[in-house]
Image (cartoon, rainbow, N blue to C red):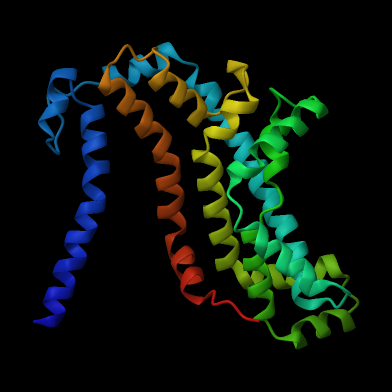
Length: 269
């Protein structure tokens, strides 16, 4: 009976999380009059909401911008996070613990605190309305550094010593020997970084004004609150569905690695 009760509670919890998204997809395929029914199946099925979105905003260009920004930034986060994580985990140098504690401290600061200084920096560098403004401020990720450090500390030192005896340099040790052994950590960082960047609308709204450079969440936000949707709820929901689908697909594809890493990434001193 206890096991039945646990599974029943887990099922109810899963349904409570799934229902809003299922309804959102259903509402995006319903007529404007049928949205208020809250049914799980479309009412008066129609593709018009999606066609309206593509007709009113350059969603394809925004999608490409988001893919470019997210791909480059996530790649740099992985590379730089692995380099710094390896240095903090396996190299000895003065001030190592201080550097580590400073990195941990930056994780406690909300992004809004650095918003204005970062914007002033982008203006002085002349990076406003460019991809650089969307990429550079995010390439050093404290959480990625922490996860890589913990993952590398969990690997045996003999693995590194054997590679050095074979003449491998530090970069080869990191990217050809250590990183392949911590793939769950790499997948976790990839998913979390992708999700954070893909869903970010605040920073792009501040540094990007040219519509041809706007990211997908920025353009969808402006579309929903800026008047182009003409108060049509179905059109707004359709835009939100298209924004959410890439993240869901990424998670479904890598969920095993993600769950495994989150379950095994205990923090070590």
